[in-house]
Length: 439
Ligand code: HEM
Image (cartoon, rainbow, N blue to C red):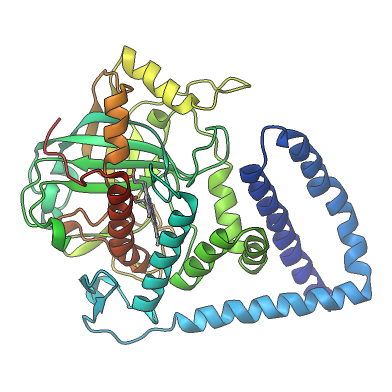
């Protein structure tokens, strides 16, 4: 009984922590500047009063029974999710989703269709679209996520495949070639917020002059290859069930967000881990694909790391756009550089799963291999035209050669969602959606 009490105690501690954390984030997004007062009060409640009262709470028999019931219910809901994840035998099942786009599963690379995947995809897409329509009653319509960009910079993606085993020298990594490219640096939130707020940071790179037929049916002849990365090695959502709940909750407001946080403490914890990182400059940050991609006959994840180890100091009161300012200051003075790596999947899908992007692939079993260097020449990127160009660009992991096909349910959902959302914002803004060919 003691152990059970301890387990429940720890579980509740975590749930309550994230409960308050999410209230706190919600308030942050809703309240004007004076929220700092509330923030301080809130932190006091969170860390002091709540922590002290917690033991008394647990000693009360009624509350103990109530909490046990709640934990029991959440555990049941978790186990029903994992039951849903049970393997379905899918030999190259074709998944038609709402844009009528077809995706052939690479079952030999560990892909498995998620139960009711087409329905879940449609639900995610509809929820995001309706959220966007509600948010922007009139143009300009921004991205549903990663709305704030720090800028789009010109760069050169120089492939060096000498460390890559020959059988994996495919697609853009087939030859040691240099590609012109644009990188869009962003904050993950759907609303532009001061950079000091906790957030996911994005790094989206578009290579130009890449020959070969591409995966998107509507853009099959485009000459671009995109790689999308964030500053988190693993994604925070494990499966489409949770993603659907997450998107719905964020659309519905506070009570739903709280319910989601309590019922999904692991997701809340992962979001917290990402949000608590404070970055100095986008040019000094590591980025990861977090989801897997095909590389010839295997799967890989991508990583991008700064070549140097510079660490710009952040002032105690950083400005709202300090990430752009730091990047701009640095690029006015000198070039910047990143190394681009792939991590090979070794074929054991238990330890290196394709369908669960929350699981890290062990870097000892499969170290990252450098396959390219990204050089960002000294430049100014903040002109009005360049910032607008950046806003109007579209990145999707499906702007891709078949050799680098996105893998796993999270990526499959992205095929139709990115297309729909990008089309919607371009149509509403009266801007033609087009891929660049060169600088
Ligand atoms: C089911 C999962 C996901 C959904 C539904 C989703 C949805 C979206 C949407 C709607 C956009 C805006 C597209 C546009 O208007 O052009 C976007 C942008 C972005 N997403 Fe995701 N996303 C998902 C997972 C991920 C993951 C796993 C990553 C990790 C790398 C990621 C990284 C990004 C980045 C970096 C951008 C900004 C791209 C840009 O600069 O234009 N997303 N996402």
